[in-house]
Length: 443
Image (tube, rainbow, N blue to C red; front, side, top):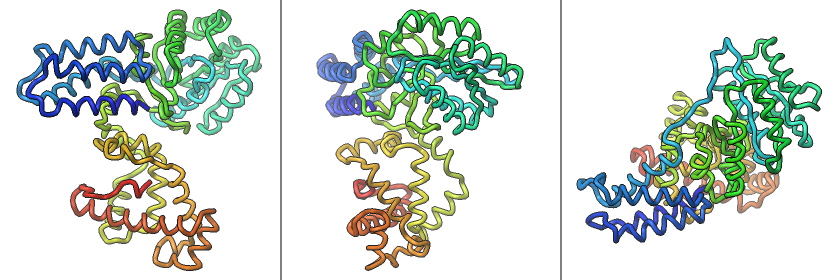
């Protein structure tokens, strides 16, 4: 996501290196390149125009400081303007105290990942807010939508109210009554999606909204949506008055213009982004963190937060001691790969590490290779995982057969593991410096 914009901005900043000051001449071509990059990413043309004008005004105005380099000044200006476009601050969900029922209504177009997002919201609130949640299945039109919500309810371990599975308005009202009678503190209503906005759809969601009086009306938008999708979202907001936006499929290979356009188009905050298809693949949207990622500067805060969810201090200390003593085994290697997968895709993690995206610009991350590495280790005996020196001759052939790979793949894994183990030891020894380690060997 947003690779094109990030690369273009990085290239632009390089052209400013060595200049004595910012002036109209040296930023004219830079701004032209930024404009092209934003338009190619399908950012709304009005957003592009306002962004470029604002950057120009600040770059040539009194806000430019004499004490820092032109490149640093320009990066700071672009960063601040990106934060403005993205929304300036993060927004939490409007939830009442648990003694009262909070109602969240979820709406959007068909194919945006709406029902899946309902499950993710439930998982997020149960995990982080310890809420007692009821899901209401009011999408009675899309084939298997109710069954999908039931499966999500089972995964998150929350109850799903289905009613007669025919009348959405009746289901919404009955779910509200059921939630109040049974001590739920949060009701999340999944409304029907459509392929496009029509009067029947808007009348239905408006009637549900008036009946249940939600605290939040969240609009689910696909990050891959183009200008037409944004126009539909604008019309949707006029009719329903949404309170926040969730952008889905943010991990997809897409131009990403929606993230820079939708706040301007709808004038409502983006509250969450969907970063994977997993049930926990929902993140709070922080405009300042997103701006640094767009600029290729990483997002260390989010990375640390993700790490804290899967690692504890005691485990980290034990792992560090093993690495120092060269006791890091293939089993430890497997465990770390499993832990990292819980944090998200490798590509998304790399984007959060400052400078890493640029370092790996020409390295293709092969998630399938990592799965093969896991399969190879899982095909080993316990003794082999604890002592990689045992993996020779016929053992390699047996492991390769069990994992469905070649002996060469097993050899490559062992070389990769040994190199990684030594690198990790060197990193600790040199206080975090990776030296000339070739990252491509890991992927």
